[in-house]
Length: 238
Ligand SMILES: Nc1ncnc2c1ncn2[C@@H]1O[C@H](COP(=O)(O)OP(=O)(O)O)[C@@H](O)[C@H]1O
Ligand SMILES: [Mg+2]
Image 1 (cartoon, rainbow, N blue to C red):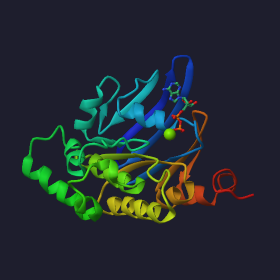
Image 2: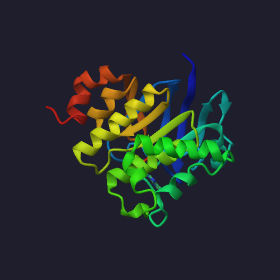
Image 3: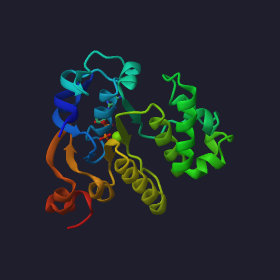
Image 4: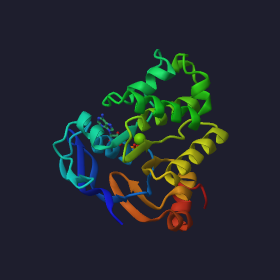
């Protein structure tokens, strides 16, 4: 299997505070890899670093065979790495259609963009029905759909999702998880960050548990789902 993303001994600090303390993992083509861990573990910092929004202190990131260390954030998108951020960050005053268009800001192929907008509407019919409405009128779950749809508009090779189920009803969460499964079936490679370990681990090919900036446990999704420590710490069992 080819590694699409390889992270080696990555360290990231905010001033003197080291938020990521030397983590290594890889994402192979076509896989869902999941980072789980409690609040403050360094998951978001890791994704923001991969996106080029934060500069790492040390370590290496290789994406699609190229080192990412000195590549600026907008170039990273054009290399094929898309990020659906924690908290979604959609543009509430712009319409749903405009938000999707923004995800394609580096593309010039008008017909291809329109095709992908239609595909987003097929994946999430509610977005199509409300395409002309301000995105701020959508519910949390619908905003999550929009954030995912927008990230896909850059035609990424790797889709990074930061806490897509945060704040959603169980039903909406199921729908988002089903969509992630569908994306994988369609060939997408996904790096998924979740506090909702149960749902995420059942989807993941490989998973890593992070605690205060370190990876403390790695395995297949199934391994971790059945691991006693994980069940105690993350699945509320004792
Ligand atoms: N902008 C920031 N400035 C300083 N410290 C930060 C900043 N963002 C996150 N941190 C700290 O870095 C650590 C990791 O945070 P984060 O990556 O958001 O974790 P997670 O996504 O796993 O909850 C935490 O201790 C957090 O307080
Ligand atoms: Mg986070």
